[in-house]
Image (cartoon, rainbow, N blue to C red; front, side, top):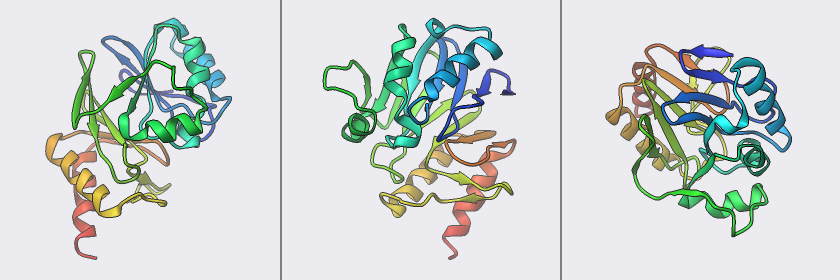
Length: 209
């Protein structure tokens, strides 16, 4: 479904929220879900966006856990023009959970801030996992597993953290770099409008606990 202009949420995949961005360089898929979810993404491209797998320019994995990364190689097999994007610190886990061989070509992110095409920025935001990344597109932040938003719309830190202190530092860094209006996480609900203010209030509240 179209959430805001140029941002879609896939319906029918399993394991995570998958988003499709209508970016300058082509379509960008953020996170993919469990094995088999590639078909839901392909069907969504056709039925809802009037696009084909050849229109996908990038498949970005925000963190390497099965429920958001396992279907990546199967989706890539359909999307012949796409580049698979992952942070260097996630490579070992990514290869394990998605059954990826050493010879698969990928775009490896290895900087605190990286540009992809003309309008995608990738921020290294470790804490949930070592190589977690956040995607900035226009006035939206795609935060992967770094933030969970419950059914009532309240923010929370995810469970099974690599490093809680590091995650809070990463979120503070993100707040300092960008005043985004919307947050789209891999799990839970999303927030459209005033997301930067709401996330800052949540992070500030953690310091009082």
